[in-house]
Image 1: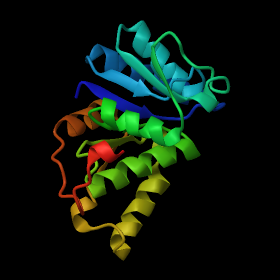
Image 2: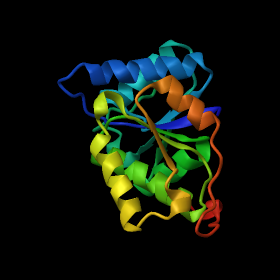
Image 3: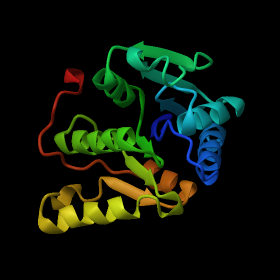
Amino acid sequence: MKRLAVYCGSATPADPRYIELAREVGSTLARQGIGVVYGGGRLGLMGAIAGSAMLAGGEVIGVIPQALVKGEVANYDCELTIVSDMHERKAAFTRLSDGFLVLPGGVGTMDELWEAVSWAQLGYHNKPVGILNAFGFYDGLLAFNRHMAEVGFVRPAHQGIIMAESELDLLLQRMHAHEPITPIVKMDPDAL
């Protein structure tokens, strides 16, 4: 994996562990020679990841829709691409990265996560999707994902798309060892 799309919140929670986690992830990825493709802003966890990765000498590529340039304080210190909308942003994340790393975040992060999972099911990509379940943040989501599988809404072949670990090193090892799944269909990635 040369680059990972990192999905996380643009908010700064009151609990300082979240910002510290983002800084640690950014510097760790840079030390391991893994570039960061992210939302292009300076705020919250997004900004902390980018800042720490750049400080450690890592590659950072930001992709931000024009409408968010002012609101998320676009990061012109990294390689920044301004796109027209969120769909174009997520398509760029998929094109530019070798996998998806999800940290704590809100609705936008959930949108990005589920689209990465859905696109894997449909064959738009065959890249690993990893959740860093720090502080048990994603326990409920992972339980819900298991419930969807138990009920029959997630095919057996797709139940392993989401890899989740509470430790970054273990998660990255699993992502490096990723074996592509058999998709429902094979969609044309150029159609994104």
